[in-house]
Image 1 (cartoon, rainbow, N blue to C red):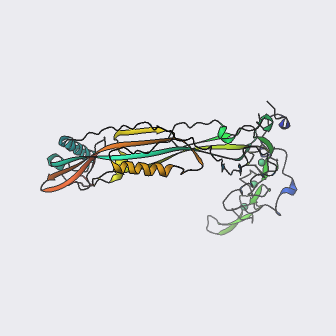
Image 2: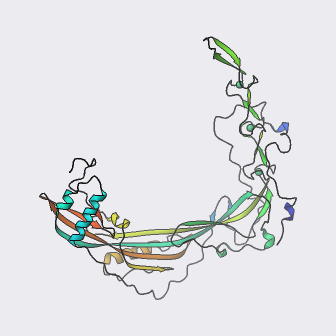
Amino acid sequence: MAQPGAYSGGPPQPWNPGMGGAIPQDMRQGQGPPRAPAGGGPPPPPPPQMQGMPRFSGYEQVGGFDQMAYMPPPPPPPPPQDPPPMEFTDIAQLDAQGCKAAMLQYVSENCCYGSKPAKEMTITNHKGITALHYILETFGESRSTGYKTEPYKGGFVDGPENGPPPPPWAIPCQPDSMFKDDTKKIEVPHTASVKPCHSCHARGWDLCWRCHGWGQVICTQCDGRGFKHITDPQGNPTTVVCSCGGDGKERCTTCGGDGRITCDTCKGYAQLKCFIQLKVKYDNHKDDHILERSDLPDELVRQVGGKLIFEQVLPMVPPIVAYPVKEINDNSIRLVNKHRGAWPNERCLSQRQTLRGVPVTEVNYTWENVNSRFWVYGFERKVYCPDYPQQCCCGCSVL
Ligand SMILES: [Zn+2]
Ligand SMILES: [Zn+2]
Ligand SMILES: [Zn+2]
């Protein structure tokens, strides 16, 4: 292991205000302490020069400082010859008693709904429908690289003397869990070097942006005059010396009077470690199709539990073609084709397709000569009843 001999001399110390004596007089800008800017902050530091940065084989397309460039993924493996057989599960349905129980539960959860119609209603008809929910997920990984800097605080530097860097797609990295978005950042081995901070010219400090090095700004109380006009307790106008002491200046609060501030780029350490950073991004692309033939709003099906009819996880899934409902097959083909090659910067790690059956029961009822409908849906037996007879938002007069 090579030691960073060039950076010897004990662990680096960050610069702090007051260190190394006073600020050189000729560094101050302007004729005297300036008027402090009303707001804002320091101007952004310039990016480091790419000139002279070490270059590495396999990283010809690396981005510049803080600019990540995609690394083309390796070609996908050939699709499997024999996709595994698909077997689909059947779904059960709800009876009239179950429909009414669900309605009573629904009314009790909505405290301002009167329970009278729910208790007295007669269920005249109920029809079970299975809503189908097809989901396709493509879990992909992209890798991008760019140069980064961080304050060098001492310690081992893994530079090119330790060998060539591994290619971007050969660096080991795993997502925390499959089918979940995630981002990981890794220092590419053997790409680090230490160089003087470009932002502060390796001093560790910058001239204070607020007082331009003077340590003082024009007093905001008296605007530099040194005195103030006030009204004395007897009501007579009078002139008093300002709290700044009369010289019209006040200590700069940004630098504490030093005239210098710690460099934000190197955090005062004066040296930067430069290296190539690998950013590994995991993206789960999800698409779905809902087949629901009643007047229940389709999107409600997405949020509730159902029965798993079919699930498949493969490096690349083949579309469902043999399900007895044609619309499901058609949409499986449509979505699988849509996902194929949709993310050219990504390597596809895995695909998952899921077909769920969500029970939906359409219920007709009568109550006080009104005929209407409601729906019970999902394993949770949620109720959708847009025209429930007694929905009062104050809950006091309905019973
Ligand atoms: Zn200052
Ligand atoms: Zn003053
Ligand atoms: Zn610096």
